[in-house]
Image (cartoon, rainbow, N blue to C red):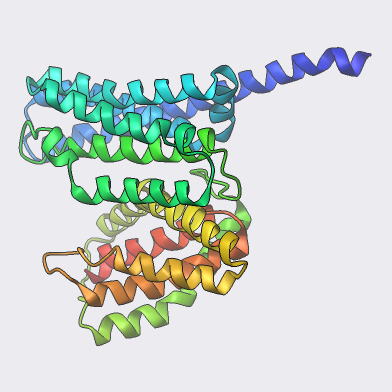
Length: 342
């Protein structure tokens, strides 16, 4: 009886701890973001009125994005709302940062608002109407890719000043809406998404990074894709490495590993019952997704490089059973490329 009566209290305590952890993490991220935004504004002479108008929108989007990657918080949200209500909240959350930024900069357009509502609504309610079939997953991935690659957010979010790219808000929104739809509406397992890799995942990710290096260097050098550069002083190189790694880990790698390895590779594995086939097909599609890279289309050299990278990432996911491991590998490769070889 004592154990049964204490169970609700324990559950409440865990929920409070998760919320406290989220708030503390969010506060730290907000402080870091504001400091970075201040330096960025000074570096590129961005008017204070513009900076103060858009920063609140970014802070709110960061709050939504962070909650998506913190499982205890996400579970609490799921427990508080029925799937239809959750999808509605996701849809509304998609347009609030836009409204804040657009109204603050005088670039608000009703057409853009409606477009965002329609896109977010389709993604949020997708699985409630399409169900949990493989065909629904294929359609959802196609939707996510089509909207992202169309660069439609560049037309919705107006640039209020040089070097102030508000379309990042749209991209971040689209990523988190897609993740929430898969995790909280579709209830897709086997992804084990999160922003902080565990020790085992760090280890697997680093090992696969070093495993990819010789192949990546050989192919990249053969195709003439590598342009070694020295970054000086050392302090600047260190800051670039840290900033590039964290930015890639929590945004680009998080997005691509979630949808390619966590959703697509897992789906192909489920249908074929073959890990090798799943890794290979996913890697090929991952490579083809990089055809638009750079200014030359189709960029077959980059597609081949990305395809090889995809095989390594797929194996890291298979070994770890979590997308956090290939996220580490992915972020390390991109950091090496961007800072020292691009």
